[in-house]
Image 1 (tube, helix red, strand yellow):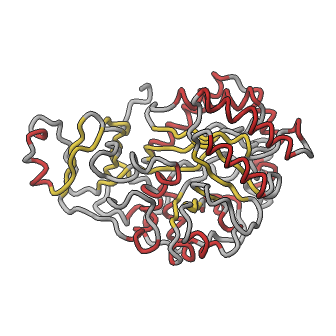
Image 2 (tube, one colour):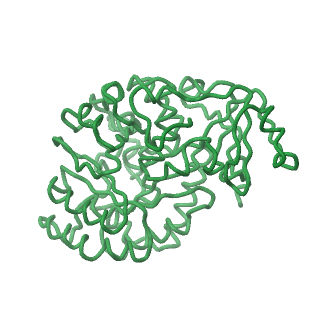
Length: 399
């Protein structure tokens, strides 16, 4: 998936740059050479290298899951059976993160409890081939719980995945500021953003626009403050708007954007699709993947993992849903799940493709063709995963 320095868009999303009988050389965790096996094997630096034989297997970049809540309140189980019988499989009170009960739970979690939950979820993530993960705080909505969650995510980074941490304090309004969303956003700008920046606890800042969150004007001011402090930014849409601030690196909830395809094509913002949310929660509205791609927009895929809206860590599942329901081709889905996801997180220069100078993050599949990933719904084809040249799957559970 070698390409330009930006996210793939339009017809570029169908160009994978596959190398038949290829090889790559990783030195100190970074890709040093990539190309036909005959040429790479003749390099002096390859003579003493440890060789991984992937004959007959498809080798691809590690998945980049760009929008998740690794640390989130658990879904309710008490009335789960009743909800299933009534056809309301997901928890109807947990349709948004945060929610009042979830906020209470997250504020009560210790750092040790959060770390335990994070480790448990991470094991599921790397088993499905994700090597870079975007994870957002924002379920506690007060200073103590938000900073605690970001510190835990920082501690989980590189164990063994790369975690791009996002501050999600603006994904909802704190209960202490009920009915005063403008005051809450002003407090976040004045107090929380500088503190998070000073402690270097996050790379990104997310803000929600619409139902239960903030108006477009306030969100634009918040994004401006975040950019001034060196963050990259993402927008989550929860109701219909005409547009989002063009400075945003990514936008999800794109089904709420009016005239989105035309405007997205002319922007540098990546549209993040989360088909697992609709699959789990139901509903008729589909994210307009085909319109976005045909209109020249850059599209990324994510599991959207959280226990209430999309409780799956499987990027292969997201690819299957994108192909079966959103009319994306397998090549487009693969680009969206790797290089475009990396650009949505602001790490496109380091992850998402098998190029010289990038991290040695790659997957070896129990398949000879990448198109088998979306074709085999619910099947994990991962044989091996490497993060910076080190094997993370299969991996001893105690590691």
